[in-house]
Image (tube, rainbow over all chains, first blue to last red; front, side, top):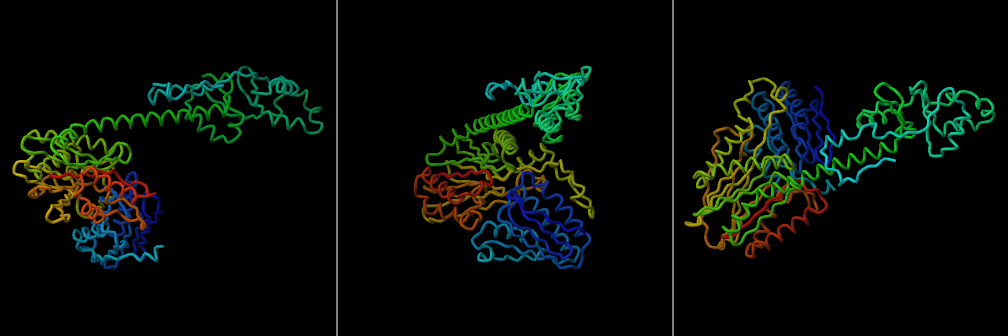
Length: 133
Length: 426
């Protein structure tokens, strides 16, 4: 299984899906010109990984501060894949939802994800700003 | 020297402009030599014509090489060279492999070839022939750079002109809504600010005898594709409201959903994926998945009620008594998207409009904008607080306060999305 690593740009996040360690990280912002082109290979990779993985603990560290509406749709597809896998393949999927203390927008989106994808072990985590700076 | 028309003189279209310039446009007639001529002849020619950077060598009408001035001069300047080579054929110092192009070659192909053949061609130039390979003259790298940058500027100008004109069209589509808002409302503001001159944000207002229908729309995408979507949506909405659908914003949303899905072929049935097959590996990337987030409101001015139905866009309101911002929350499905079922049903919510009630609607452009000291989103809370502190002021003044606060918050951050925010007082 090939891990996925994509460097961060001003319009797209850093994607570090380390399938061999079962740790998935996504950090930054997402508003690429074509969100579906950006996310398609990620979804394909994740889908293949999940199909081959069962009875595993998978950690997804989500740390985006902005995503446009077309990226949002792609993120929903991604969470849907994870949710399905958690419900059928006996995988335990922890969704660490990193957000700034004052960032009600990101937290609210996270709570929606939590409501829609009940199989994911949703854990809101307040970012430590000292560490950030 | 090339005679390039000033950019604003040309009235040609993109493809015409490209076709107008070919390798032949760069042709310069300059003296050439034959292999029978000697290096002394070349030396004489070069001293007579200090402007020549290179001299082509032509045999029987066909180009066979190019003599570069500085290489030739350096070669001849070395000890005893003059004595050795002066009377020999001029091909001694000739580049046997210069770039030779047909005069009908496009500027684009030519520039790729020049770049590919390296620095020497930019300096020496390239030989231009007719269709049968006969020598015509030389083109210089300098002229090529001029034409390429002119074409670039011209294309850019055309694209900008077309976007500017698209902006005029989009604004003129908004005019009737503006007029209806002006007659329906005494105290209101509408701030519409697309990120790239045109955009996917849109508003719609239609006045009737018993009230007015108001919609704030955020179509997928921004820029030109977003603007395309807004015109489709506006046309659909206008058409739907010809019948008595205005009293029921939720079912108006449903009709819109069906129309958009049908028009853009985003029917969910065609998208059903068999179980256990890889969904993304096989999905069609050409399938469009576009739609809109929106808030539809019917304001009945006779019995003073507002009926709202929302697709991901909430409604904020504030009454004199409460002095606090309350929310009518939207349903969480957007209109028209592949994931929204054809028969999806939105819900109506109704509020009474007491004297002085303030209503606010905004797309996510303001709320999601990154900025501030921490580079995080502006947020709903910040907006509600602003509204709370200023709702008693006239609406246009509130607009200024909200936008000034927003611009300051955005600071040096790039604008992420189109922005639309509106408020009105009953």
